[in-house]
Image (cartoon, rainbow, N blue to C red; front, top):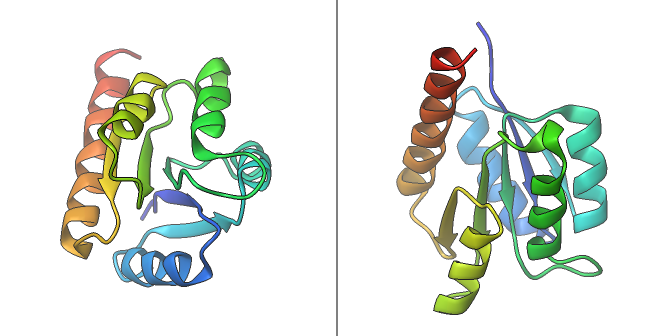
Length: 132
C-alpha cells in the first residue's frame, strides 16, 4: 500500500510530536523540519505529498517558505496547509494569496486536521488523474 508523505515545518517540538502521532496512526509517513530553511531542504530531499507549514519560525517564516515553494515549478502542485496560531485575518489572506491551499488555526481539532489533509490530497490526486 502506498503511504502519503507529510512534511511538518514547525519550530514547536510539541506540535510536531502531536501531529506526528495523529498522522502515523492513519498510515501517513511523517517527516519534519524545525525551521523554514530546513523545511525547504526537506522538500527537495523528501518530495512530500503535502506540507503543513507554521508561519512564525526563527529565520525564515512560513510566508517566505510558501512563496519560495510556489515560485519553483517542481513544487507548484504540492499542497501546502498553513497550520498556525496566527488568527489575524490579514495573515490568513496573505497565506492564501501566496499559494497555501488551506489555513488552520492552532489549537485545532485533530479530526478537522485529518479531514482537511485527506480532502486536499484527494482533490490533488483527482486533478493529477484528470490532467495527466
